[in-house]
Image (cartoon, rainbow, N blue to C red; front, side):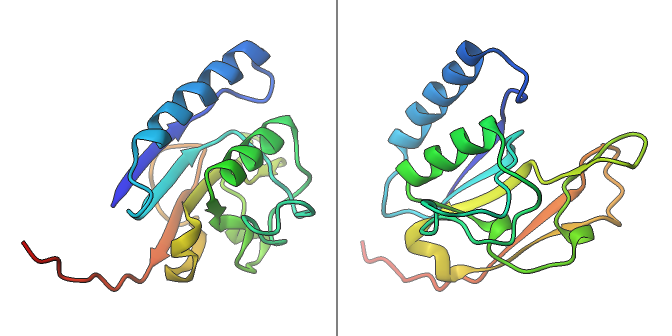
Amino acid sequence: MNIVQIYAPTNEAQDEEKGAFYDLLQEVMDKLPKKDINILMGDANAKIGRENIGYDRIMGSHGLGEMNDNGERFANFCLFNKMVIGGSIFPHKRVHKATWVSPDNVTENQIDDFCVSQRFRRSLNDVIVQREADIGSDHHMLLGKLKLRLKKQGN
């Protein structure tokens, strides 16, 4: 199992900075064995929204809000790398989807993600926000639940 933790540039960042981030992330992904369970998680600073036309293989229709530029970049990255965006698959109340809330508690966004290799999609049981977790951040804890059946490997 490989876990890649990310912190992407914000939507307002320059295109060059965003491009450099995704180029570096692609280099990391290229080094991961395709047969392994690969998890990509963290602050993607990307709103993927509810509309999944063209992305139905890697995301569901249970996202929050509308897709922004970073969301399109992230969705295309996940499509290219065959990574399923877990937060968009499972139906939950809005309170269990918003991963970030503004200091005035008015704006809510789903910008943190938990993605898993497409071939392990059926192992992903849920992705949900845990608002009650006291983590000292303006982001809420995102919980991804996987059920794995591992095979023994011979020497």
